[in-house]
Amino acid sequence: MAYSKMVKEKQAEFIHRETIGDLGFMSAYVPFVNALDNKLLAFINLPYLQKQNILRNDVTTWLWQSLIYMFCLFTSGSYGRYHFRSDHKTVANDPAKVQPNQNW
Image (tube, rainbow, N blue to C red; front, top):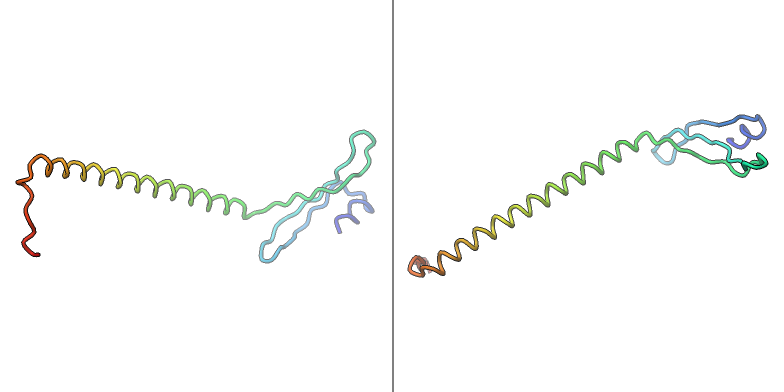
């Protein structure tokens, strides 16, 4: 269809709606010509995906959530490590502070 419009009817570009599965998009075809002799070499298809921004937003959201998760994991690990060391130092310095568990 694009070939007949551009070659036979001498249109400079051809734009129409296409679908792949459930994804609908606008597609533009433009000629690709040799700069020296202006001979037609090929046609270039330039799809315009309207849902590309939605996909980009989903990826951005996922990246931010991953960064926040890693920050929380790092913070909780550092907090736990600090408190483990401080409790360990207390017990190591004064063994009398250790109470045996009477429930055993």
